[in-house]
Length: 438
Image 1 (cartoon, rainbow, N blue to C red):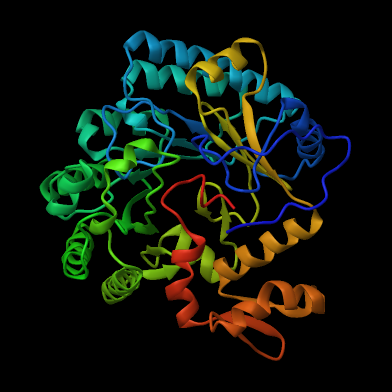
Image 2: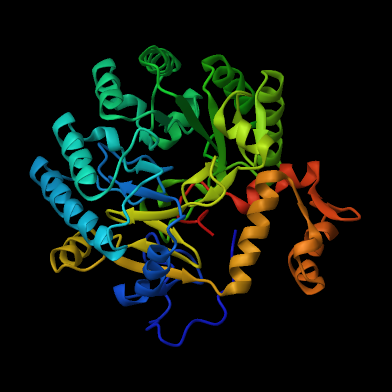
């Protein structure tokens, strides 16, 4: 979802626009920033004692890079490089904690990658120890982690549960063998069955997985078979995201041949198959592109009106401020979405100098903030009342969606149509966290 940047406070030293070729940039509206830009936003967060906080910890190391990868990742590395990274991660955690004046109680901690579970047990335990030293983790803190299923074992899952991780997301992409071969990310259905079975036995609160639409080699027929296979795995939830080839940002994707990518018509048909397959299996359609079991917290949150959406995805909190630490990590504060430096050497240099590693940002004025709130509310609840909007805001933000058939206008509210729920996931979602941040 894109926002337009209009008036910025004159006291903020905003520098030049970030070039699209700089991997991980936030898009056309991103500006290069210095840590000084963040100060008023951190001050506002510190003053708001009721604001719920989340920590987004980026662990970029990965054993290999598949062609679908659109994350900030580090493949060529040694054990001492990981140790060096964790040492500087500790320092960045300290800098963030100081920036918000010790307001360190966390509602959520999320570990993304890369492949976070590529790290050794000692390395992961050290990261958890660093977080506990600088922030407050309680029994109510929800801790989630993305996992590479090929790097997962029974011992590792037991270890993660012992550390306090209660929610897992398997980075699957697709279960079709041909598609896996095309992108270089191979894991058999039997492997996924074993991982999910073990995870359920360890009693994680939530186990999810992803499915990307638009990968090379995917067809409507292969998607139909993949949906049946994924339903048989019975994850607690699944997020369906569109893949976009961006070789200018992620150079390794130049190996993805454009003629092997499915057309938009095929993508729409695939998403329709996804929706029908999971609906028939008893899942509920949450937001635009998540399918969750009725008892799952996301389904419950949507029914009760508390579902929220931020740079981490959907969650049961209506409003959550996200603080990102680590290489290329994303943060979201009221009025600001920013990303840390995505070059490893530059990230190390900044943190070593005692500076926050913020690199690019999208700054929003009050109108932008309200627009994002309105559209995210529409996504999360499928409807919204028009009484809080001016006629000009309705005309600018909602009536174009009505004209396209994505939204219907009632006497006092707007509602997503079936067409909107089927098409908008391809416009407002993305497999890359950076490009779905807005």
